[in-house]
Image (tube, rainbow, N blue to C red; front, side, top):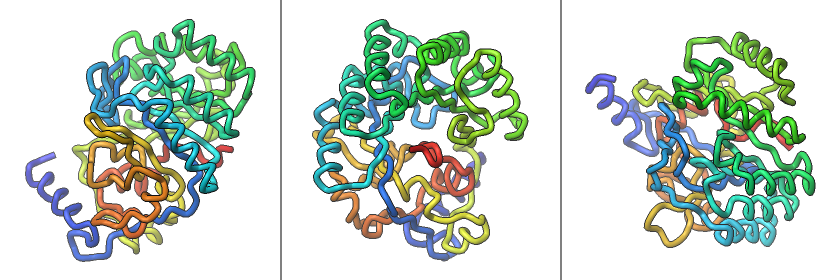
Length: 329
C-alpha cells in the first residue's frame, strides 16, 4: 500500500461515528450472546506468515489466561443467565496454555459446547494432553469439537503459510483425532486466488483419502476464511451498506459473541467485541460481561459496536468471515 493509500485508510477510520465522507457509521448490537471466546494467550509453537494477531513462540502480548479467570466468566454466565451455548478457545495455540484442559473441563461440565481452534501439532500431541482429551471425549462426546487450521489441502501452500513440515505434522494430528472419534472441523484460507468451489473440491479429495469425519461442502465443517491483507484498502461500512451487501448486522460475529483476553501487565482480563481486535486498547469493553453490555465510549453505543476498524469491513462485513461456525449447536 502506498503512503497515500495508508493516509486515506487512516482518514477513513478516524472518526468512530462518521465515515470519511460524513455518513453515519454502521453499528452492530449484541442480539444474543451465543459464543464466549477465551483467548488462551498469543504464544504459539509456530509463526504463520499472515497470522491474524501475530502469534508466535515469542509473542506474549496476550498472556496465558488462568483457569480461575476463565471460570469467573462461566460463573457470570450462570448467575446472570446469559444465553451462551458455546465456549470457544483460541490463541496463539490453546494447547500451550497449561490450564487448557482445566478450562475445557469447566466449560463442558457446565453443559456448554467447547470449540478449540488448534494447529493439531506438537502441543496437542503430547501424551498427557492426548490422554486428557480422550477422557473429555469419553465424558462429553461431540460437545467437544476441535477445529484444525489446515490452510490449504496441498502441502506446498499450507507450508508456505505455516512453515516447512507443518502440513505433515498437522495431518498427523487430524489423523489421530479422527481415529479416536473426536468431532472435527477444518479451517482453511482463500488467499491463493482459488474460488470456493475448487477449494472445497480439493479439500474433499484429501478428506476422503484420509477418512476424516469432515464434510467439505458444509460451511460449519470446513470454514474458509477470507485473506486478511492489511495492505489492502477497504471501504467503510455505513448503515446503507447492509442493503447493498444484502447482509444483516445480525450476521456479524459481534452480534452473538464476545472475546476475553488478558493483556500483559493488566491485573484482570478484558472483554472485547471479537477475536480480531486484540491489539486495539480502545475496543476494551470492561472486565465483565455486564460492563460490556453497557459499554458507552467513542467506540461503543451502549454495548453496540461501531464498525470503526478496517478488520470490521475486511473480514466480517465484506469478507463474510466468522470465527464461530454458522449454526453450530
